[in-house]
Length: 198
Image (tube, rainbow, N blue to C red):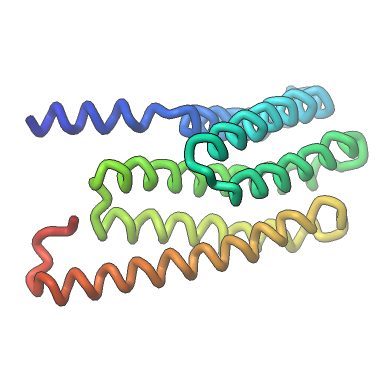
C-alpha cells in the first residue's frame, strides 16, 4: 500500500508545470556554455518557449482555477521576455550570464512551489517538508535574487520587473512563513508530542 501511494504521488508530480520548469533549468544550464552558443538565437528560442508557456498556462489557470493573479504574473513575465528579446544585441556577456544565474534561481524556487502544490493537493505536505520548501524559496527569491539584481542595475529596462517580482516574493515569503508558523502552533497545541505532521 505504501509503495502504491508513493508511485501515485510520483505520477502526480509529472505535470505540465513541472516539465516546463525542469526544461527551463536545462536551458539555463546550457546557456552557461556561453562560448559555444549563438546568443541572439538562444535568446530568441528561449523567449518563444517561455511566451508559449505563459500564454498556455495563463489560459489553463484562469479557466480551471479562476486564478487571475497568475495571469497577471505571466503577463508581466512575458513583458520582461519581450524586452529581453528586443534588446538581445545590446547586452554584454557578463550581464547575460548574471541574468541567466538569476533566472536559474527563480526556476529552482518555482519548481519547489510546484512540488509543494502537488503535495498540498494530495494532503501529503507535512511541516518539516513545508519548512524545507519555504527555506529554499526564501533563499532563492529573497537572498540570491537580490545579489543578482545589484550588478545588473545599469540596464534599467531589465531590472524594473525583477525588482517588482523581488518585492512580491518578499510578501509571499512573509505570508507563507506566517501561515506555516500558525499551522505549527496549532499542531503543537493540538498534539503536544507532534508525532503526526499532517
